[in-house]
Image 1: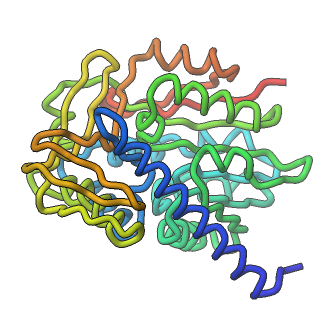
Image 2 (image 1 turned 180 degrees about the vertical axis):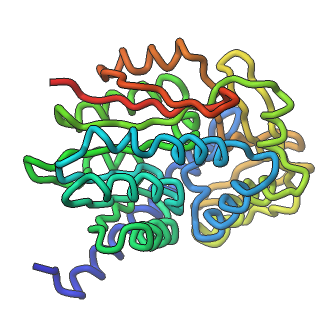
Length: 331
């Protein structure tokens, strides 16, 4: 039975207020740290989602192309364990869902019933992911979840006893977490999954530095616009008074993790107001906005073992730049 429209509207308004409060609380806490930081999950308002889609089509941004290559070649292999059973696909950080469509089409050919649950903080991204899923597999049951990854663990769509779940964590999403945070998330996913459920998770591998720099600091300036949009969003939604034009985008390499990192660097000293507080930023005092960890094969082994998953197979692109690992929950 569908809830009344007024009830649905009230739920949506309450979630929007909760999201705004979380955004404000996390932004104030981050700007209070040294070095200051802003959570990357707030990149993705409608404009941020569009900018990221443009980034994925840039010549130097290899990640989307190599993972699409993997899924185009191996979607049938991913779908094979679900043959003959109803299946629900839970897509964490779905974005626009264009890569997921490859998997949905493969699954539709072997399962009797298919549901799709994209998870994203962006309403615009969820709408586009559901539209792409419907175009790829007419009649697919859409169950969008507007939430962060961690919140989604508590809200994974309930399924029937015979319905298997395929959890997707594609792209370099896991790389946006520090290693300890990534391990915590994977253990949480493992606890939320049932025997027979599968997880397909993407890992960007260590590669030459010049390749990485081209991906995270493009000469076209789209990554700069994407990074700066976070400040513009805070101005629009939280009443902050950043001057985005007074910041520059900086991408750095940390060989210890290893990881690429994104920063916003003020070109002059300024005072910024947010939520009744003033924050002083010196010229050159960088604000950390994103981390993108790169992995070795041994690190991927450690993640699977630590979280308690059984690895079935790893799929690589032809250059060995990226891995999609298929894990399952054993009996």
